Image 1 (cartoon, rainbow, N blue to C red):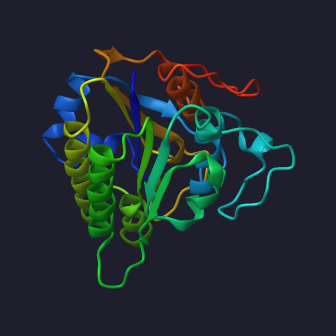
Image 2 (cartoon, rainbow, N blue to C red; image 1 turned 60 degrees about the horizontal axis):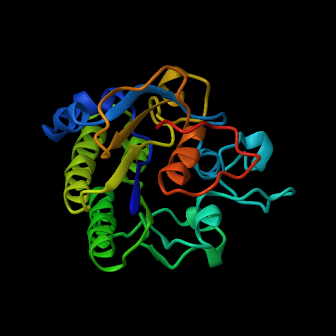
Image 3 (cartoon, one colour; image 1 turned 60 degrees about the vertical axis):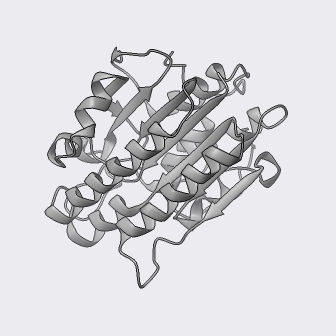
Length: 257
């Protein structure tokens, strides 16, 4: 395996996949290994969830319990720190607080587009990220790329989860996911995931709508439905195993493949 591409759609509820009406959703699920019942961590907020995704521990261990980053008291390596000695990692994103997910020396490429550009809708900001990721996938010879699109979460907060505007943004996200997957080499594993869900115009609680996320693994001939008990902490071990690297000994998740 030469490339793992992690694609995260912020705030994308599993039930929005069918509700958004994008025909690519069913095609992707039929040709992937997936769960629509995976769980994130509590608090189900963006930065704590991302830290748990990248570092495979609960917020009580990495110490990030709000959307404000503070240095870890007992540092633990994340995905890119485990890979960077022998592999090339990059990230492209449109929510600035994610800049602290990785140590600077662990990335060979990073690109940020603000989700709050006044002349662009959140979906358009997601499109910028997707276009940059397509370019990076074609030109950078990366082993791991993290692509983050925050438009769905932004619209959820402004207009409400599962409303018309929210579902339209999810639909747009899947148009981008299709482009990203189709431009990847044949030996790529693409992982599509959310960090959390949402309800009304918020998230961060123990409600099922906030805590349940989709996890989709596409590539490597994988097909079917994942076992029960999948959590966001399983993503980091999956990525490093597929790329032939070692997990940090403190990681709590288990590989899904």
